[in-house]
Image (cartoon, rainbow, N blue to C red; front, side, top):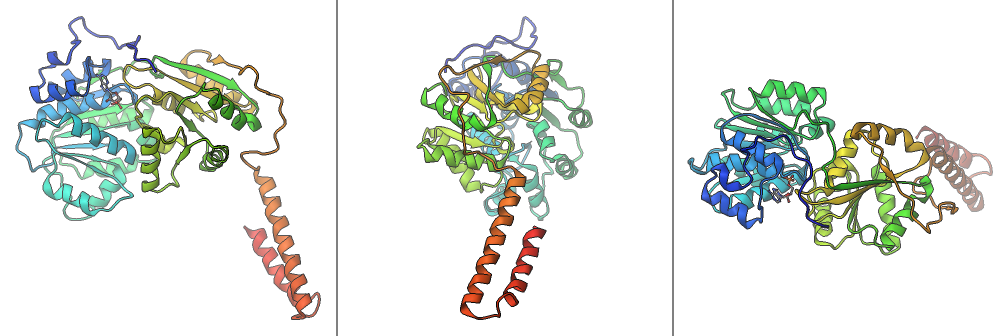
Length: 451
Ligand code: AMP
């Protein structure tokens, strides 16, 4: 993957800074920025950091990969570095555990030469260590809304000294049904004036309404721009019959046309089945979806990041926002349901200033959804055909057995079991042929039908 400067940047004044030095950040922070290898602020940072340092509320449209995390962390760290420790002054709300962990990691990097502390607060792990973060008055808490509410339900979690609030990936929190939780969290925060950073990739109406409630005269960054995947991402579509998607994926991997790749599937079931199939033919693959435990997700992500797994088979709820260094490709194994989902997923490859490719497999029945996506991104996506791939191959094995067939299969199995039970009973002479066993089988049959 090549590092390229973004072609597109939001409108800037001629005086907008092209180096971190011009922001007036303390030397401790500039040193950390340098050590991270950040040479130039990204467009979102160039706009959000000065506004944040000036104490303004910020409303920004930004994707993962835009450098948005440092865009809110740097002004927060600057504001907190000279203050006394022991009070939680900043709260960052984010939709997923992975994002919370990632933001905390980034905080630790940027704050390494300061004394500003931080902790991630998310579900799926013990409450105890997180309780300590509240009791110690950790400077910056990075939390998922549900777990934060669990802590608020106990006496120790008080954020009376809060001065700074961040809503990260607000639109995804909406998608995940967290809006009521967010409102509940807000009721636990002190009512005095605070500075709020509101980041969202897209601005659906409920998000605009929430931003209006929370922000006072915000610096609006990128909000007029039509939501679009970060530039530098090559996007292409592979039309392919549904039953040949696995074969096409394998062929792209075999030819190294796909490097390390996150493969998004429509359902957990499809992600599981796909992972099984890849595993069977020796492709190293990990799974990431809502049915996986926190430990399994952490292992999958760490393994994928370290290169142990070449493929991460995922559904997008949990995988969204994951920042993987040098991710080569994103593959939509299924066409995303909404244009916003598409834009989010494709954003995975676009780290700050880097490029990556995003491919989408489209079966004929998915053409309608693809057209909606093309309308939203404002152009027709390039169609590709893989030379030498047998698009007419007949494949027996499918990723998913249609529901009607699954039910018919279950009924057939129940009938077989019943027949076997009756035969066994008759053989043992336990019951008179055709009487009790049939009654027993009849009950089973009813249960099976009711399922
Ligand atoms: P984010 O959009 O905050 O998830 O950031 C995506 C990636 O870009 C992270 O790996 C950051 O470390 C990296 N990054 C953030 N700011 C810069 C910068 N100014 N220059 C180079 N990389 C950056």
